[in-house]
Image (cartoon, rainbow, N blue to C red; front, side, top):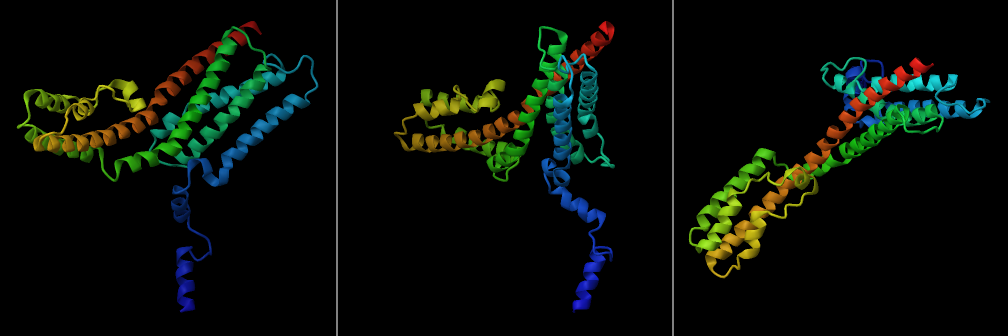
Length: 296
């Protein structure tokens, strides 16, 4: 028995006592990109940041190192290369084959080297800030980093909330459940008086996705016709009580759908800021480099 167990273990590990490459890849699939390869890119980013700070502090130079000194040019070149490389993450996402640079590794490097860029870029300025294209590039860089941090936070926390909100239902299933409730409401509202029936009709006719971007991001729908109908119906007769109960169910279903929309919007909205800021940063950075070499 022991021999068979050892034989199975040897077969699993290729007879070497080590896990095969495919098994290691499967294990790594369950590790967050932030923890990729034991925080490899975090340590590299810390090393880069530490070396940049040490160089800035140890170089005995007057005036202190800034963008116009040899050390400033060195940090500027590193920062320029980092920005261009970091902006290629979108290109990497469109490539199917993992290759030597898996998407998880690239994303991990993108996050940690992006944070290190804040240190490199700040030291490159030599803390000299003014109303010029150089400072514009620096501010845009910080805004890109800040929006990137927001993106990391929402992608690390919100998918679990989205899964919990859906309760194992797809978006189509949630809409189908709402449609089924609407059919019941339409039938149950037939005995109601004209004014009360109009409230139910208004709720049924209102677009589920009304409210615009602000409503999706906040989850607040003050003009929700279903909520208004719930408040206005007094539930006196049996028909009104049945309609009111169905309206409560409809409102709960709407809340579930809107909750999913809100989480999706929070996951996606930062890209509509992060990407344009990145494009603006590259443009400002190009102007910064050209002006530096023009006046050099």
